[in-house]
Amino acid sequence: MQPTTAALAESIGVSRRTVLRELPAVEQWMQAAGAHFVRNPGKGLLLDEAPERRDALRTQLNSGDRKELSRAERRQQLLTRLLSEQEPCKTAVLARALGVSESTLSADLDELETKLHPYRVEMFRRPGVGVWLQGDASSYRRVVSALLRSSMPEKELAEVLCGRMPENEIFSTLLDTKTAEKVWAVLQQFEQEEQLHLPDAGFLALAIHCTLTIQQLRQGGDQLHSPVAADNGAHHHGGIHRGHDGAAAIEGRKMVIGLVAAVVPQAGRPDTLHAADTLAAVYHHIAR
Image (cartoon, rainbow, N blue to C red; front, side, top):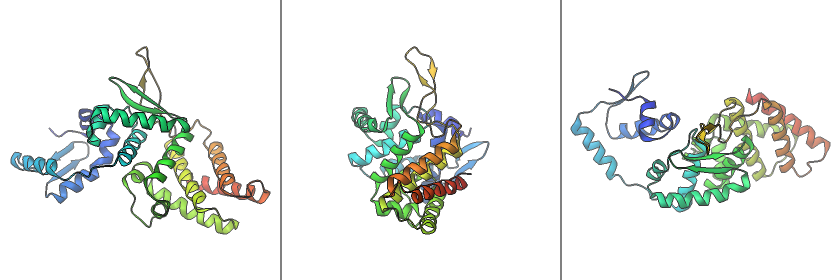
């Protein structure tokens, strides 16, 4: 019997979305190892190899050199996982994925919880349920922006955003590459047409936030996590909202104008406000 992505996700304690995201890398590894790995839509996944060959592949996989992450890199990956999941993450699964003990994972979660407070993002941990984050769409953008900017130098991040450099794992998990490239091109055109020059850091922040908000508008009211357990054993909806509350156009326009006001020195001048209005219009054209 061929396992489906849903069954595989349930067996290892992650969401189906996570399995789908990781499958291309699995296929790439299998191909490099000379294995016959088949994905049958509607049927499931199949490793079409004899038992002896499967054992050899398992040995090869287990003996492969695993890069040891620094504490900072490990916590970046942990936060990326928590931000991208739509369901609570089991601590055992997280520890296994990062190659650490559950006590080390607990220390990492403590550190992340403290760092998330300024962004108005709360972390919840429940035995038997898992770990999840809770906050609004604006908080999500701010956390992702900070994470991306801490994962690589600004010059490299700019090269990735405009499509001149391959993305890293954090970028590819949290940002849509095609949308990021289109936003970058539109912002450059906007600078030329409006005769404005945004500081490099401001341009970078604006590109990231516009890309994230466009993704949120496209995804509607999706949340990062599924219902979480309340203290009385009932369930309520939590998680960081990727989407909006039905006022997407207003929220998006305010976000763009606010960002332009933050990164353009003469934010109060009428021509700057007009430029922000123009950018908001361009932004909504992309978002549709």
